[in-house]
Image (cartoon, rainbow, N blue to C red; front, side, top):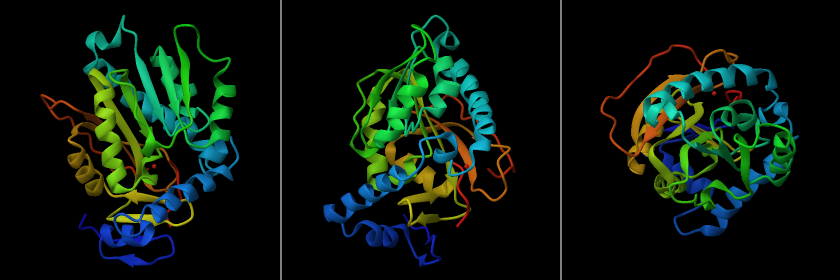
Length: 276
């Protein structure tokens, strides 16, 4: 990836390859790469299992985030799923689910079953508790997987939607591509991915504290291309504080869309995170 970037301490990198060599070592150095992932999980293990905790002290943006996601999701369900999803048993996977914030406030209302995937055990325990009294027999959280994203292989053709929000930045480029390549076979016909993430203005920003990378829009698009995914629709998140990174939503499909829908917005918005 021929894009330049910086880390959270201001160090500049001429390319993503140079950054990854420093962060996870040379190709084949599994020890350093394993430590990268271990340090990322350790960071979140030190965070309070609450909405304010998982949103980095910006719990007040929860409503704006959910509202933006719901508008995007409703349109996609109507356009992509047979009969707009009516009279179907719909299943979603919530990746990087944390304490179940998105499942509780959004996904469980639109899907009959939601599986949660989260590597931090205390967050997943909180999710079980938070969702215990939510939903019904026909709208419920079903499976709670305490597995890192880079190690997870979803069940074949189980999901109508795989929702990936504020977690894919913890994956290296190669593991990013590997995850989506595995997950493509887990979508039902007509199913799709939603990726909602922080955006760097250009190149990338490496956060050395939580071991994550904020990628630019061109960086994401190149990785999606490597995954063999097609961009169906995008939307900018609105209503987040100006000091945060911008946030963008991507709808991605395995099949080639008959028409690519694009929306434009000048509003800056992203998981909320202060620009470093």
